[in-house]
Image (cartoon, rainbow, N blue to C red; front, side, top):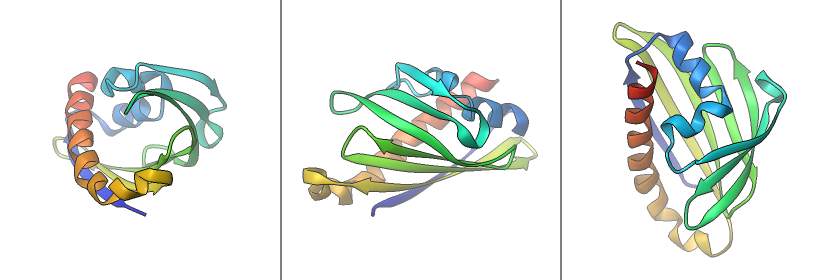
Length: 140
């Protein structure tokens, strides 16, 4: 299972950064390859939603929050929808400049995508670097 980590300083209070990341409806504001969020149900630990994703064509990923510790940690796992299913673990810590955001991702890869799996960590790390730039600009 390929993995990668990405960290950034987001120049906003921790509570605000956590609120944005834990609200599925705000994902399209900072992840431009996610044009829509639908079928949101539950809140906190019981949140589930569908992410419309533009990645190698249009996909619909069924997502579920599998861990939720307010203002500290949130884990969002893809349940189905494509042959790359990420589990995204976000950890939030206060920083003098705002919020230190740590992302650790495990990628469950199936089918022919397994052949490309060794390339994914570097590719997705760059993508998430851009997401964090967008997030930083969005929460200011």
